[in-house]
Length: 315
Image 1 (cartoon, rainbow, N blue to C red):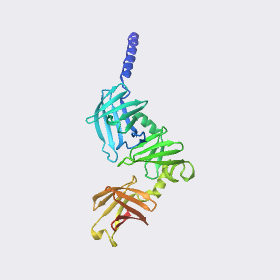
Image 2 (image 1 turned 180 degrees about the horizontal axis):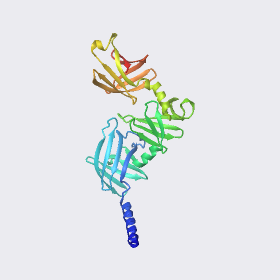
Image 3 (image 1 turned 180 degrees about the vertical axis):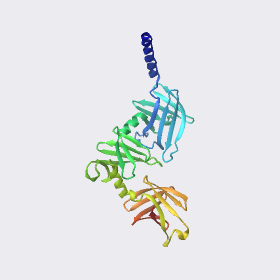
Image 4 (image 1 turned 90 degrees about the vertical axis):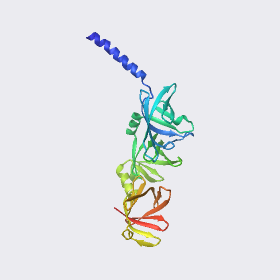
């Protein structure tokens, strides 16, 4: 029995060794970490990409999942892939991506075309570990939870943000999903004052480490506008009337994430975005038209333009 055991152990070790040697370093689960434009600038929203993941299996098959900014389409494409000397090729129905390994980063050149942004992927395991140890802040502006990784960058998909530490400051790159323009904002770290450990934007609270502080600040600022508002008065070019007089029920739902949706008589009547201003909020709808709103007591007054003003009461 002992002789058989002594023979089996080396055989098992040999099998494990051969298996390990045969496993490609490209195989595994990869998630989008950042993107690099042709001028070398790191940013989020990789030319329309919001989220992306790559699964590469040992048998040469795989899957690429891409969500485009603002679409949440979750496009999933099966692929085949093959490793060559110094790179791998990922082939789908309509494209071929090239990829190379730079330490623990998978650098992907979409479509194999150098005129496209390079996408940088990390293993899902390392991203999960980085998020677990990340600095967490609760955004007082949007109400979202934000992550700042110790090693530099994090792509926060819901709002297309990229965070990067720069000494005691944090660089926030915002990317437009329309023209891919990039604006860099500097957030200053502070551990003083009434906010505790927080990030300031031009001296105003942007995000607090303490969720309760962030919520209190949000409720007293943006939170005043968040909620479901029902029209109680309509004014058209000076003529005022109630919704009942014209058989019209108008509702505006203002959400924490900066979006809003309107319904008229129970039917969807368009969506838009809103941001807070010194004198109220600015609203832009899906057509690009802009409107303004402000609080008058407990009511929200929205000027839709062309002499049309609606007064709404929060539900």
